[in-house]
Image (cartoon, rainbow, N blue to C red):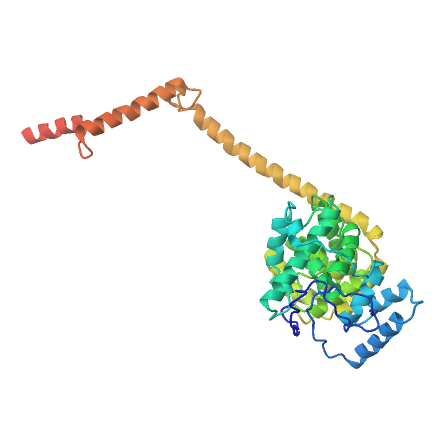
Length: 420
């Protein structure tokens, strides 16, 4: 969001960003008796093209139609330009997920939740997420928004204690907080955490690591040369981990790109971020082939997503990949790759154990050549006596003859030389 061209409106001193009463965001989406609990942060709407303005009219017409179906909302969110603006997303995002859009809800304070075991970690992550806040935001507003974000996250993991907070979860939560406000954002995160993000919130990342291998299974089918190049380089899947965990929110600089992808992901199956990740990698194939075939170079390249990518083209390709190669068809390839990596990991671990065993055996052979009475150890009394006696004799000699004194036999030898 560092490149987001936005302005921040003044802070309402009485509400401090919480339970603010603003009904001018979208006249078609709010009724007079609905309280808007979003923060007072306002993003200046970017200039829209003629095509975007036409798309906006379609969405506004659908909002005004009581018979608009879920399929229509999904088609609007997936098609070019997505939902166009945050004022429209405020209305449509809850409809896409079927969550209650009302805002008349009592929200606990940060102090009430501060005893939770994850509190400190959540606060640390939220404080490190300055990149996701609008540039130039006043300090008071930023602090208030950070507190809202912390409360939002803690409420979800308190409500569902079997879910584990992970680093990157706050990148997802802040996007919804900025668009729909604290009350509705909680209901959205509640649904996503128990469905789309559920595997990411398990005690271990085992299932998440498994899912990331779908990228290579897809590459094997859609671009075999690129797959082989990256596989031979040993790139792995770590470059795509933040993409999957945060729906690209952590890795993109432009706020407009983030919310466009969120439009798409809210209207598509849970594994669609992996298909978008694959499409993104394919779109940069020339850059990948321009790098040397080694893990570090390619990982570094893919970890940094440029700002000039055409995400509309990437999304079209991702949807085609999903249609041609749905997850159930990819499962066999994924399992084969995971089994191969597991076997390779076991071989490497065995090689390491053999190397350590060899080093240990060399020490044992050397140690066996030393008399037991010379070895200092808790099991060797002779070794302890010998070592203690050596230290005492050295100390007594030092006290008697001083630090510069020579050994007695050297003095005798020198005196004979002087007598001759």
